Image (cartoon, rainbow, N blue to C red; front, side, top):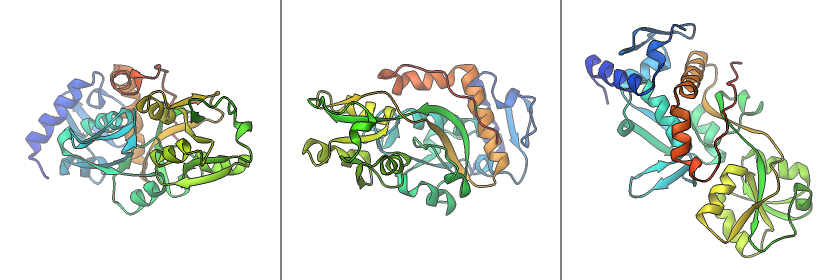
Length: 291
């Protein structure tokens, strides 16, 4: 959907006002963005930002089965959660209304392919930054630091640390960094496509635990109150980034600018408190990596 230039500028101005100290007010134009007032946002011709802003729409990949971060809400016919709110902040700075965001479900195994083949413009989906993935895509961020942990049945007091998973059947998701770590650890990994599909094997005793990022497990435990519990301390660092096309440096740097602005103006914390913050404590976001 295309908008007139006037409408685009007006929409961008609303987004800019919603985020004090927004991109429109920045003097930093080193990433290709040029601005001339707080009420106007313009982008250098030929950049991804200019193309998306002119189109008036963006396609964002996220999880649809992860409470607190990305969970599909049938009533809204859209996902909700912290990752979703981060996506909205980015879209808003492009002058794109929430209603004009196209949400696409991305599971762990299809995130890189969807970015590479253009199915999505960006992925915001509890997406751990690592060197292997950076060989085929780029990452803005990180915007959150999670850590791998363990979910067990509520009456299980035998599993408390990662060492208790060695030689044991444990469920995780194909293509995820937690699954790779479980293999390295020596667990007998049962792989599926989504973490919710791990819950029934856990209930039935086919696996002794589900292991992935602590914030994902906290959401699953909260969604199934009394059935499961998260045990032990996180034993890895999982920096969440925003996936985008490799070598699109201007777009990556611009998203980094948007993230930093959201930290400074409070919109990041507001997004957290409205979603994951209903269960989890707020922690200061990590510094972005401008590699």
